[in-house]
Amino acid sequence: MSSIEIITVENKKDFNAFLKFPWKIYNNDRYWVPPLLMEKKAILNKEKNPFFKEADMELFLAKMDGEIVGRIAAIENRLHNNIHKENIGFFGFFECINDQAVADKLFNTAKDWIKNKGLDEMRGPANPSSNDEWGLLVDGFDDSPRIMMTYNPKYYLDLFDNYGLKKIKDLLAYKIENEKLMKSEKLLRVSKIAQKRSGLVVKQLDMKNFKSELEKVKIAYNQAWAPNWGFLPMSDEEIDALAKALKPIVEPSLVLFGEIDGKIVGFALVMLDYNQIFKEMNGRLLPFNFIKLFTMKKKIKWARIITLGIIPEYQKRGLDAVFYDEIVHRAAKIGIMLGEASWILEDNEMMKRGADVMNGEVYKRYRIYNMPV
Image (cartoon, rainbow, N blue to C red; front, side):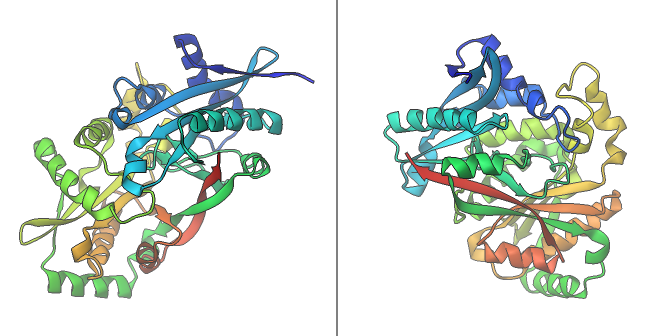
């Protein structure tokens, strides 16, 4: 029986091997979308990614007979523990061949690292946090992931379960069909009533004043999502970094702010599903693939509602219906007739009701796992 060796990523060669290992796992998987290597490098860069101002991370590779057969990251997220009054660590960026012994070795390595940090539990997958890619796909394998959503082989479920990781929360993805929704009398009625009663004004992102528009995001985002399980507030630096990454592909008509009497009360970020284009880039944006972002844009048929939130004191007034109505009609104008609302916590009844109002159907499910260390 071959022995399994775990090595810590400490040099450029191992780092590049860590980055490119997924190509071995998904080489023949037609649903996989190769990640942009430059984007993953930025996320994993502990010197430049502002996430690591309050977090630490170690990367590990598993080798068998000199060949790389798996990878994992162990993460200490101090901000999460401070916000949620927990003492946990995270694992993420997990990829592995279909071999339980290799998976066990990777999980044990992450667990030992987390335990040595004085933490009590291990949770994940988080790549590297709930503000990034989050959760293991457990249902909906017959489709490519939408932008910024995870994807993995079905056998990962067995690797996780057999190791002893237990579900702590499921995240839902709803499929929304514009054609059905635009015929929804209920949505139109609720939207009109809510807008009339509240005086809500919906405005789209002004690209000419991008910097000042970001200030609105900073006001709305951390207030609207603060009560949610697993939520992490984003620092100004993190929002700036995310905005810089998304700016080249953002669709201004689908980034919406809600105001009442000039006060920001809600925010929606809807992104075109550029995964349909990234799929053909094989991980590389430069030197020429960048052009495809513009030449192939009209081929995109999906959008993803990444965030839609109302600050707490304005919730339960039907304002979310106004946003939904705006999103559907704006998307239709640019030829987008399919949408994914994700991710939504399985016990977030308010957001689930909103998805139901949109005639959405749960078509994918993601899982967060937990275990003591």
